[in-house]
Amino acid sequence: MPPTARAAPRSYTITELATEYDITPRAIRFYEDVGLLAPARAGRNRVYTQRDRTRLKLTLRGKRLGLSLHEIKQLVDMYDSPSDTRQQLGAFMAVLAEHRRLLEQQREDLEVTLAEITQHEARCRALLARAPAAPPRSPRSPPRRVPP
Image 1: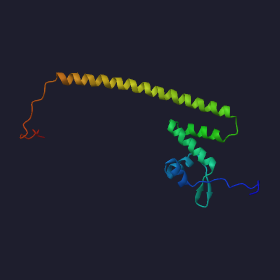
Image 2: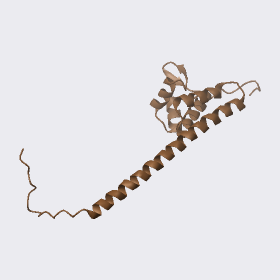
Image 3: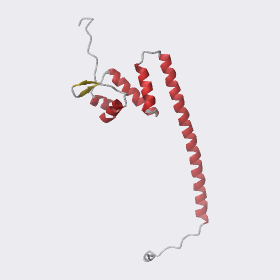
Image 4: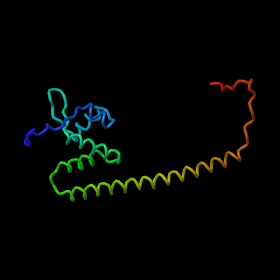
């Protein structure tokens, strides 16, 4: 093969990407609708490039981290920009720091709530231990009905 000849860039179908990332084609179309992906078209079929594949991978990574679609879009758009990598990494670090702050606050809130639940459970156990036992019902006697 002559040195100037190049192989055509790899393309992917929606089914291939859905299978690769274990998501539904509908999820991929949703990411298109919100502007995270923009595949080319070949007739009625979507044709995804390596760029689209990478954007999908970054999107799914952001979702696993618990980032919002808005935050993910900002980060994925930075991937496409020709700007300085240092600036992109700084922006990513800022998003991660804010997300960490929110998660730590949620953890603190959960710990407070769990402590309150523990106190309520202890109070209920103490009240149950002091409450007189209900007299046993005879298995043959029907439940009492209250007239309307």
